Length: 304
Length: 294
Image 1 (cartoon, each protein chain N blue to C red):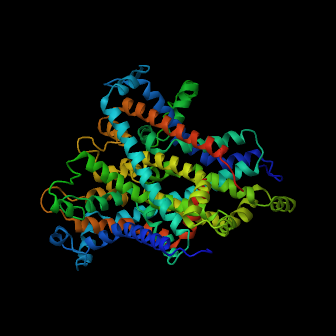
Image 2: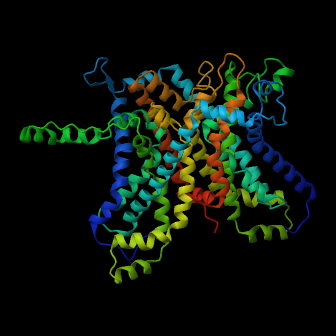
Image 3: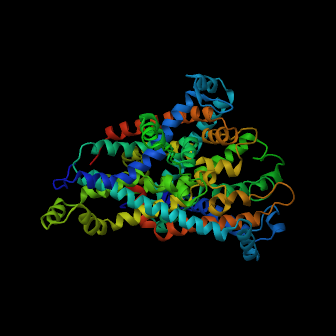
């Protein structure tokens, strides 16, 4: 700016530096604690010079929390949820923006209102639905009398059942629907020039063709931005995976943190706990650092 | 906004929207309806369906001092963490926006906390704030017994608020900085030419222009404090000591899955849902009416 304000600049720099320390300190402590042995990590104050046990601790945490399997599950889970969100919201927004059928706006609002129903507040009934994902349809058939009709006509008892507990499907499917993603794509489609669709129609392309060959390539920046934030979001999910996967084969990394809490008896092995924390928090952090531009862009354009 | 060129096939349009509609029906609307049904009924102990009990679940809930405790704790938690997270983020964003030396580094590092999973930072802060090891244990060496989140409810609440605010400083920072950067530079330059210093400009130009963002973040932070707090509480304190950190979502989880009181948990869900809906509506109304300076 035009003026010189050395004192105020110094104050700013100091505040920013303190902020930097506050942000970095927890990371530093986690990393340093992960390098100590169990005795050093429990001394007060903990020495800030890194010890030499990093790999032993990482190894111990890896085994204790079964991280090989769990990280793989986490990648699978977060990747699929994010990809599913991108695909489904691009399709839903396409239907809302590029078609003129009755009930289109109702659809938009139905999707949009789900913003007000976060998973945490409807957790108990959602769990019940996941135990049998076809229960809603069964109930509809029962209430409308269709199952009674079928029983009387064909003698078959309609019993729809599809349990999702302890499966990848159950872990992933309930998290795939997204209002924010649909909203982002809708905004993007509205900025696509009308001439493109007109030209495509004139050349004889149908809706599917237009979507796959023109909109899809055009929306790459959107896709990357949405995928980045959704990947980080899904990786960090805790409550749903905790409930739905009691079978350790389907567990994900973040819920394993519970097994890393040191026991209250004996000397707490915080060094192993911090090593495990380090491994589990690293992937989304790396994504954010490497994809910062996309991450920020995605976050800001979806939340407004 | 309407498109000029559209496709006419209703079938294809519906097919495109179908997957999303099925998912939100099965996993959003059906469970919400179910919660509503459970909230007004009571399950028979030995099976045999639910009986309609009207408002009894709610009456029971609202006369339960533990529930009111959870509500007031959620308020303390929400307001405490929101004001810390927003205040700190605003200050950092205002200063980073002055683009002094090193601002690029600040700009990227301040975002990092938001990448960390709530339970992971819960475990990290559980260590950092542990009374016998870690970092705050230093206090206990000087004044023994002053800090003990495992026994003292207030300390435990402070600990979860610190952990949550730390994460959301990153989140708020992103929004504040982007809002600051969208303020036309010419405005600030004109004010500087007229002789106003940097603090004056922050107070009289940048802050007023930030009010929409401030309000948006206020609502988002409070809503997130209902939801994202679960992982932190579950790892750091598990609602204890003596329910001192039992927030609303934690109580729903506990009553529903540990106490198997579906009706009570459903009634709590309905109340929380009402709160979230209210906040969202307030936000939209405000955003609709917000002042545009462009």
